[in-house]
Length: 323
Image (cartoon, rainbow, N blue to C red; front, side, top):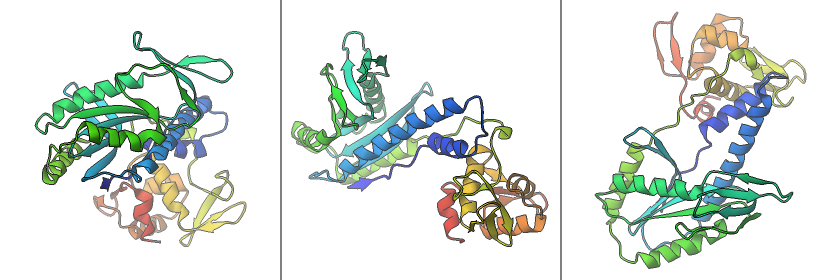
């Protein structure tokens, strides 16, 4: 078995950084909070399903890929929550963390949920999403001949699945193990060797389109600097001789700079200069800023005076080695 660890979505990381820094009474605060709530709930639901994959018992080699983003010829993207690939078949999974009574109308393609208070609302049709993904996967996998299956999995135990067409299986996460076994019975003969399977998975990974952060807001709308975690990010910390110290509770830390610099990376830019560091983090000394930047051995271009530092992906993990 081969698993790819599901990473927190870039937009969710952006919202986390923004909400801890957003200024009071920002006119869009409620909008950002709601966006965060939805994305965070979706990610939690995906993680709940991910735990089930580790319980899967399969007779052969298999791969489980998460958050794969592929682009078709029209440059439209297909974001796959999970793609299960084995020698016998592929399974495209759409994950929903939704509560209430759920109805899928096979004629109108309308999907609704009824809340406990009786409120009825529509939501995107997961069945048509799966069907769209399957049609695209058929194109890019035409030389490998693997049968392609699809399923919609609900991770919220309070979801009540009522009417739905039989075009795509829909079930709770607890049914995943049983569904995988039924697919092995449906497709008993292996189509690919392990070598061919690995080659196909490499093809999928090579076509993956990494997330890009398109949303930016004016930096005047959020607070700059290193914010104190002990004060729930309400107060600023100041830099002195390699240590960040809170001006209110006196909490000190070296490691908190990694979190704050990741906020800068998400909210402002993926590169930073000496002057940008001093401005955003309130460091007066140019020499102190230089020492701080050199400490982490960031890739850089330019001369000493005009040097631009490139902040790596997985920034906080990268910086741990230097503390």
